[in-house]
Amino acid sequence: MAGTGSRLIDRRSALKGGLAAGVAMPFIARSGFAQGAGTVRIWTFMSAEGQSPREKVFKTLIDEFEAKNKVKVVVEPQPFQELETKFVAAVAQKRAPDLVWLRDTFLSLVVDRKGLADLNEVLTPDFKRDALPDMFEVFTQKSVFDGKRVSLPIWPSPAQIIFYRKDTLREIGLDAPPLAWETFTDAAAKLTKGDRIGFGLPTSDNSVSAFINIMSGFGPEIFDKTTGRLNLTGPQAIETANVVRALVAKGAVSKTLLNAMGDDIQDQFAAGRFAMAQAFAPRFQQYQKIAAGYDPKELAVSAWPSFGGRPPAVLLGPYWTVGLAATSQNKEAAAAFLESLYTPAASMRWAKDAGLIPDRRSVMKDPWFEKPEAAVTRNFYELLSGKGAFVFPQRVPDITKIFSVLNTSLQEIIGTDEKVEVILARAKTTLNW
Image (cartoon, rainbow, N blue to C red; front, side, top):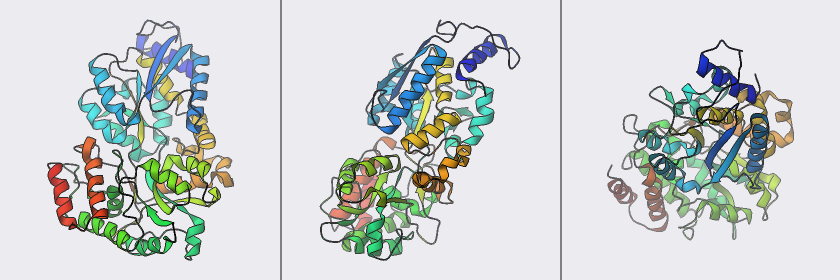
């Protein structure tokens, strides 16, 4: 595959003159920058000067792209909770960046407001032929709305899964958490010992919900195919609530943690407070790095238990995707930088240096993935490839408030004795479902 710089030239040549493949000549970009020069603005939650593993990889890829293409990449970090809403406002005000990081659960909100360009019009033929089929189809297909590809998923991840300490599981004679809820609750209860709690659940985040992750054990059928809604008063939701009540009754979940954010769970897990916890998968290395109450080598990951003999559940979302602003005046350079994030070499960097699952599946054939240090990446890859993996529907109504509403319900299920049917009916009314 041609280098990034030649892709920029080939792209403009084809757009300007419809030349045959392989013919390259100087171009004038639509933004007025000659021969690839210009600026690409990016909104993301990361900093180009950050010190996290993925920020360091990001900076390396930016430096390489700038050196090859005479394009300045400007990263403008944003609070991750506000990226989508701020971006929609910026598009309307004609001040949007060229590229933006978006959560998959917010794609429809941005698409409905015509904020994203169709990548089919700017991605190179080589990329569409070689890269797209090499990525996880479950992610790439979700980004296609009415035939338009509005974003590319990045760092494929099981998102909110279960982190556990192998040393604590060994105490009760297990190698890993049981993968059926009827046995998981008993195991989690046995893991509660002294100041250590069996299972930690965040209950106050606005972008994730442990209730949905537990309910995912019923598979993709939890979402109505027509509306994208959850049936919050149906038997599946009630059984999910009863599982939470059972975890509390058996001492596996604490009533004292009613306002725990994901960061709270992370910090307390690091201190040895939990044997297992719901956690954000891309933070695995961070969990290892800050481990104080246990040997970081004992940290491992698990799918969510299932109901009724179904495959273990892996709800793929929220996860990050990258879109191109419909209002961008530098679409070709921005698209070229976007492509540079998904080369096989970039995928290897994301994996080796940042501990992320490669976007390009073929990269998993590299001998490095057979090494012990790649064992967790292999485990994540297996979770993504399992029969129980699925994504949120393209359109989930009230996405800006569904997580907070269900977390309120989760707090009520954990902290009160009110009937779960009443709690769930109240959530349904609040969402006007």
